[in-house]
Image 1 (cartoon, one colour):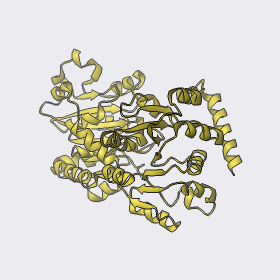
Image 2 (tube, rainbow, N blue to C red):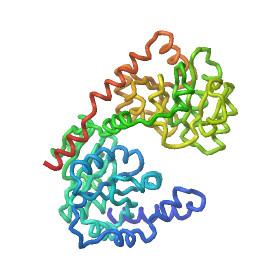
Image 3 (spheres, one colour):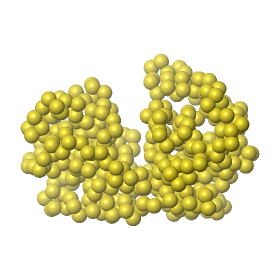
Image 4 (cartoon, rainbow, N blue to C red):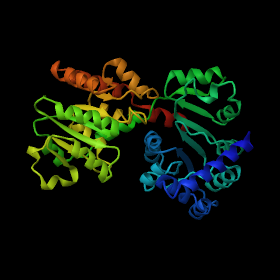
Length: 411
């Protein structure tokens, strides 16, 4: 099976090479791993007495879960060197200069040879894998070297291959984990049924991250002036399917005193122009704010990256994109500011979505009519503060995972 696994890695790499001239992410993935081990060895001395911790994440979403752990370690135990690795270019390219990591690299391809060389260069005291990442050869070599491995903010579901009758080979990777910090009781029970007792419900570190974001939220005078005395519906990380619903609602809305902010997931000029041309209300882009009369505008399009998490502080209702194609984006960011949250039907793998719907702070929609009905219900029945309060309380009740996990690991 190990030979088939490595053959699969070779095929995967060849496919990326073939598509890389036409796909920017594939190109970054390939180029980022050229002479990677040599570059790592030039930066990390194997003769060093540094106390090193290796933190691995798949991409940007998992990084946000690992980030509170990294920052808490650096602040409370500054003697440790943090080595952060990414599998995906979308995470690495954005966070390669992350200030709380001493070194940031791509994860070398998961061959037995690469894993041996890489880990012998790193010489970490421990390894923290965040949420979903299981790389057979790296994990096996860590176990061989008796380096403790912790799976942080992990989630397991009964349909995962680990729990299938044919998943025996994949379960070998579970045997390499010294301790699992899972997000919920369901994950703990699934592991317990396989005989793993080295498990505890540690919670989800993303709650700590969004609380920290709220505390350090940036102020944006342009948005304050645009808002004025109006109420704001903020649509974050939207895709085309989300935007079609939003545009239909905005164009036909008769609710007075409301303005709208759309922060598309895709911010290339062609997509921004598509949204602008479809809107029948007075619209402007954030980059053009200095050239327009904000009082006359009803819709603001955010055509940059990095502002969204702070912008929610100006909102009253949030719509989060992704629920019609890729799975919903981060609903905890608006929730921490006390906004009721709306999203599309693809939220099956998001525990927080299920819980907030059950508690009454979030809503899911399937079409334009659903969306309009929910917005009108929130407005006409004065439910915005009540539903937003549910979301804010949910965040408060679930924060604290970071300190619990780090304290357990080091004590």
